Image (tube, rainbow, N blue to C red; front, top):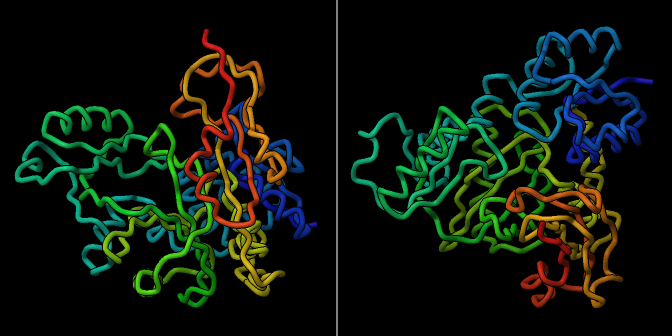
Length: 386
């Protein structure tokens, strides 16, 4: 049995762990966080920090690893790419390309220089960069995901406070033009630098405006989709991207798509399952095959012709306190197709803006607006104040 070493072990990595096992691999996970739930699904795990490449390399050699997989995180992806090239295994972009893609400023700068649609921006070095600005502006660290350190500011005073806060997260910060548009995710697969599959999902936030809570399939106009495909395939050609997945966040305004974030690791919070439930394809297996052998075959042949309407909803509390249970309105209970608990009942919530209690998948007959607009009251956690 061939072995895969996955640099991670959180719940976000479970789709790749299970897909690898279904493909016949023995899966070993890495990660020193006590709350990593993915270790329960792997065949073997090591409680070490995957950023320690010397330890990781020793495990890879001792275990006679055949392939490496990145977990759902930028650091994990970059370490995986680096090690894969050192060991000469797997199918990944060059380390230089991987670092460019996963540095938000370097990627934006590349897009701007190559006329690929993205919001304008400037790299922040000192106070001299804060002249002649047009508000609102988005403040962003260059190397973080999940909305950490990101803030929209409306004047100079807010900007100074936001910069101070962002510097707690990163030494590198840039300022981005604010685009007030529809937020979507575009999950694609590239083969020979052409898009062979794409899933368009709409992203919705809850109380934290920078953390995605709900996602579901959506349609966008052909003119927008065609422009997006044109820009992405141009990117793929310029950067010589290898075959595999590519996940992008896009803002759409006035029929124009603006690329605001990209990654070549899987999207988080079980998003691969949303794609699989909606399109009835084998997305996670395709990701594994692309990272390992580089061979993508019939994983994107749908088993059904019609796309299903499924919502992936991350249940989040609205206050701190003791987590008791999740109340689901009677009208929606029979529509729940999968639930993954992230927190045990009785646990104490100390940071409700960044806490997820469970991930729930809901299958509906159609895009029911009343459910989409009220999902945080239809599915509501019960929290007792301390």
